[in-house]
Image (cartoon, rainbow, N blue to C red; front, side, top):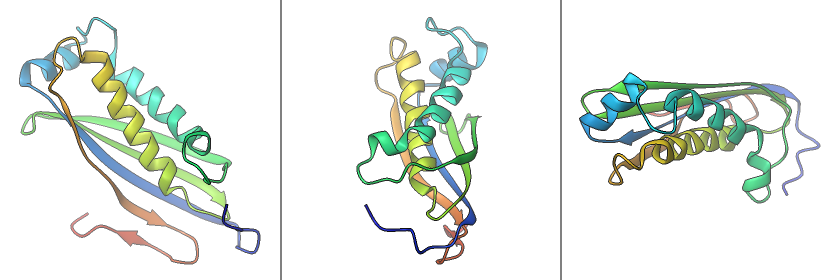
Length: 146
């Protein structure tokens, strides 16, 4: 692991995003709450939060962090069609939470897939990326157009 003991404790925030592309009929199934496994959006939100909290157990050499907040938002997008997943993670620590935000999005997207794969196996998980990070020595990063 990287030695972060000399770094200052600062407020750090990371925002990540990804999407699950699916057929319109599958999106309608999710939004109406008719998936056989239950409430897809609630399960995905909880899974994303759990993923963020356990990132250090899944990604080698990640530091365990005292996460202060994890928010997972899932919004339908009829143009895709599909669901846009966005995670915001906050911490006061010596290292950032980019991996936690990316893991939250990844786990939430995988949960959506798992919850409705019986209806559609051809769904695609796409575009998982860091949108923004704030805090720490390197300051603020935002993708162009965000």
